[in-house]
Length: 264
Ligand SMILES: C[S@@+](CC[C@H](N)C(=O)[O-])C[C@H]1O[C@@H](n2cnc3c(N)ncnc32)[C@H](O)[C@@H]1O
Image (cartoon, rainbow, N blue to C red):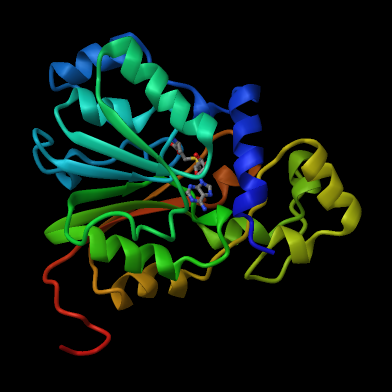
């Protein structure tokens, strides 16, 4: 099953329920960004290092699966030209709510992060992809599509969930019990029983899956990107946080438009 159609509705519901990744930034945050004081997240807690960003003024940024009124308005306030593609109309609307409130311009595009064919090749300086791979079953097309739309010298900043997060029984985790249950790669639709799946659906929880580290790391390299830095992060609210960094982020660069796969 492809998650995109189901997850569109689920993320719209998350917006209505006030999920923390759907809550727009404040006017103070935007005022500070206009003055050059800003930071953004790719993962739950640790701000992305300043060194990962070039000067944002005039930069073309693509926010990939990055709606929610969080990063995009900050980038726009800091002087970038920002386009966001996201699968959820209400997540995109959160960006537009901030844009209207703060007189910012953000181009919002409803679509799938795996299909960037509507954007010209080499049209972005930076692709910014906060943790969202877990909502699609195949990561590789995202890297290939991002590579194509990045200009030479451009950067892809990505946040990921550590695949190890998915080996545990979720209900037991909520009771602080660590029961190893699932073989990786994990997929809600194949690893949960019908009762558990129905519970997720009734709570409008987005469907999730894991990817191998090979898919997430080598997948970038095979697409032609060069990974130049990374960091790990935790989510203090997660019972696993004291044992394992559950998130990581990578900085990758497009050094040339040479096709690595064809060896040209
Ligand atoms: C955790 S939120 C990330 C955005 C948030 N502003 C943040 O800082 O993390 C995950 C986002 O991925 C989007 N998403 C899920 N599947 C997608 C897909 N196939 N294509 C594009 N966006 C997708 C969701 O709609 C949601 O906005």
